[in-house]
Image (cartoon, rainbow, N blue to C red):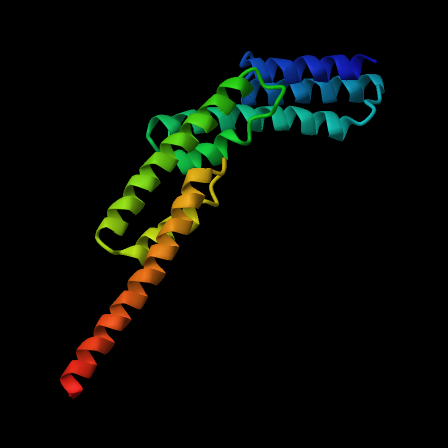
Length: 173
């Protein structure tokens, strides 16, 4: 069928970067007009059009993700790069950037959480890590840090309460 060949070539052209959104839309419109004029029926046209639109979205996700990655906005870069399709030629690079962004993000968060914990600001460390463990790819070290700081916070609260109680009993005597 000529329809799947045309749509497939158009989708591949979008993914390779040969066609941008404007030229892809113009080509789709040309195909639609030719089909109308010649009474050719494209089987599953909406699916084919959806594939081409998904290819365009994949390219936008990649470009946006790279820009966010390069600016150090790792959480948004991960989200954007996760939208790159597996059949996109940039997929392997997107996956590598997701991995690197995740590692950089985890290192930044771990350092901030440690700084909070060093100042006995355990709630800030715990809160920061609770949000961080939601960001893919999941990081086992961040989860372990979260567990550690939660335990340290509990111990700190107990120690503080015991100290206050001891001070109170000394004062009450």
